[in-house]
Length: 95
Figure (cartoon, rainbow, N blue to C red):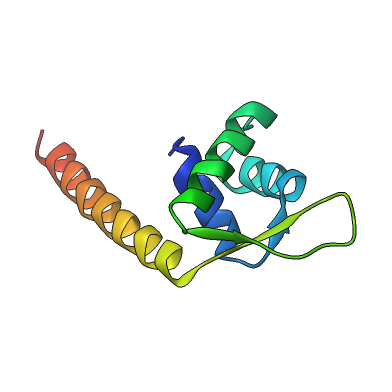
C-alpha cells in the first residue's frame, strides 16, 4: 500500500501525531518513506475532506488526529482492500 491518504489515516488511527512522527511511523509499518511535499500535500487534502483535524499546539510542530469521518473512510477502504486481497490470494492458489 502506497497511497499517502490511507497511510496517514492508518498512522493517525493509533493516536495523534505531528508530520515528522507520521513520516517515521509510516516508514516503520509500511516501508514507505513519504517526502515532505507528499506528506503535507496529503495532510492538506485530508483536512479539506475533514478526515483529519489539526490540534492546538504551542510548539512549532502541529499535531493531527483522525476524525470519526476519517475513521469510517479508512475502515471502508481497508475492508475493500481486504476483500480484494483475499480474492487475489485465493485465485493464486488455483493458478
